[in-house]
Image (cartoon, chains in turn red, yellow):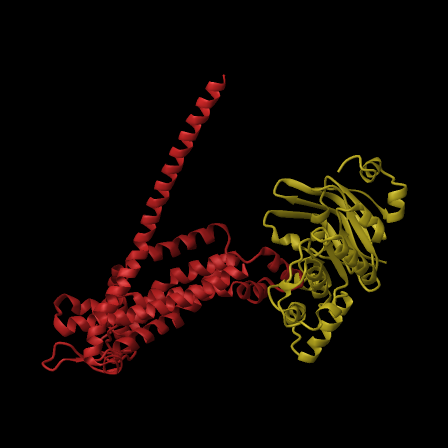
Length: 304
Length: 250
């Protein structure tokens, strides 16, 4: 009897040990898989810095960042990327000015007013919009937007900053709408009830209680939209004309992203290194946006 | 004088009949308590009085509720104006996530008061009336969510008072509070009945006995008995009331 019990205990202990070893192995595997992401980020950062610095040194920090001319294949090449930086900034700002009001009001409508089938249908459409590849946006932009701008504004070429802004505004809608809806849905019903019980109308309640309570989440949605817009390459390349002009609404322009994408295939030497430097500048912008986004997300977490 | 009179009020949530032909007249400047076991319809009935039930999609209401001589379900009634006059305090304290001052000023601002001095005056008066002024007067700009549960509930009462209602509906206002906060709210209710009509849903029969002038007993969606609190608890007319108040069920 006692032997049986001892045998059982020993067996049980061995089983436990085995379980523990297996547990540890699985933990290890998960950790390694998780580290792949971290390693990728680290590698990209390090590589971009290493690859991006030499050209900036050679060309000169200020000449590179604030030079107004880009003529990478001229006999006397000039590498000034101010046109790209400003185009990216203006393009993103324009997309935000155009896209945020539309996205914000759509989110309020879907979260607070629309019910049942209406909300379902519209949310499905928003999700679909998010899933459309950017080359398709570009294509539709080329076929519809560019000729449209040419005809409406009587400009020689519709491929312009304006076309890029409109395309970007549409492309950032899904992120703005979805993140804003999540934030607005999370506003406790009690707040809204309290407001209604004080005699406020539903619309007053949404804009004076629900939206302020969700403001961090909505801010995060906007920052996410900024990130999406500044990082977009394909669609804007197809509708913006891709000429390194200083930005102007009806002129062909080139973004940071498209500058890299359009020349990389045939570049060499200093030109190629300069393209890496452009990527580094873009990367810096993205980092800035991420830090901002994290700030708002944390704030949202604290408020909830 | 009765301020609110319901006549044959029936209410359905979908197919479920939650209120069965309730008729009651609530006297003004008094405290009326609604008691009864969970799911008896007392909260549902309370929320009907300022039409907060309108927010439930599947709700259907028959019968009338007269407030100030007018049926509140009449299409000509402005529901926002009704809710301003018939205020509400909820079970869980629900201050807005903004400053104490802005919480109180929310209602008056919504109704068009923008004058700073006038708002200051309303805020102070409301907080004084809700017996919380002394505790918060030095931190009006601080976030209301930093207050204790009991303070939050008195803030919510102050917020309701700021729009100068005639009636205050309270839906188990002390059920989420500790005993000390509870007794402060009870004292407050007794002071407030000088100026306002208070209708309070309570789970706590002792509370009804302590502070209410009239008590209504609800059971399974039916108003079983309504009368002066003292009488209802000492000589209930209905067998079911007697069973409930002597603790035989519920």
